[in-house]
Amino acid sequence: MQGILISADLNSRQAVIACDNKFYTAKLSENEASLKPGDQVEFSIKEEADNAKNKMVTIDSVTPTDYAQYGIAIVSASAVSEHAIIDSKHNIKLCGEGPDAKSALDALVTLAKKSNANALLNTELTVKPLRFSGKHLFCYKADAAIIEGTKYHQQPGIKLDIDERFVRRNSPNEAMIRYIRVLLISLLLILLPCVLSLQQQGVIPNPIGSVICGILLGLSLYTGLFYNSRKVNSYLLRTKR
Image 1 (tube, rainbow, N blue to C red):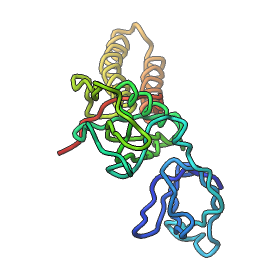
Image 2: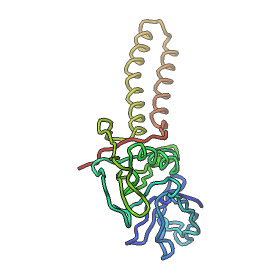
Image 3: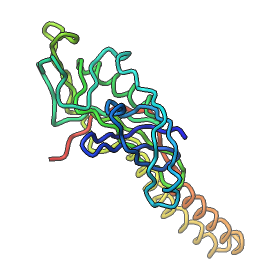
Image 4: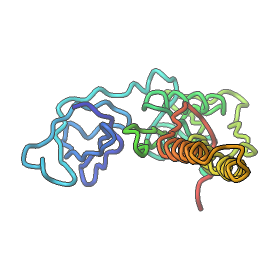
């Protein structure tokens, strides 16, 4: 089976893997201690854990995410080895999300470069299973920073450019799902009374009016339950105090 590594805890030596809208736990060996969020993982489920609620799996192979291609430092730690932090923002997270880990990371890096950051610190990957759809929404979050050291260098006179006027408190995809559901409820509150009024006036026959009301309720319920937004977005998120 193939999945995406979500997190790796070096203290407990356990990793969490997302695959097919499910999460699996793997025990890390000494050779696998360098795994990073977003790595593609081939794994197999242990036979003795088939009936367990939280299945333990064994990692067979790993395809690491090539962070070097982005030209900036991307680490899960709060600092980059052999580099000093010149400027940073810890009260605002840079976020990138999408239908897969790569598109989410691409969106995050694009936002980081627009913000003049040459490093992403405390980088983490979260995966949200979307209800009833069997799909995931991937989201990378990180702190923007400018660092100076042996590999990455600050451009003269350049500081972080993060406009706090555009800071959000939630994900654009999550906000869109809520907006659609509120819109559906509002439309029902308008359309259902109109149909019932026309039905009472005899403009619409009773059987047809009942069918129309049933269709409206059915479509609204189906859309409200199964609509899920997984667009590629990048945004600024204010951290909770």
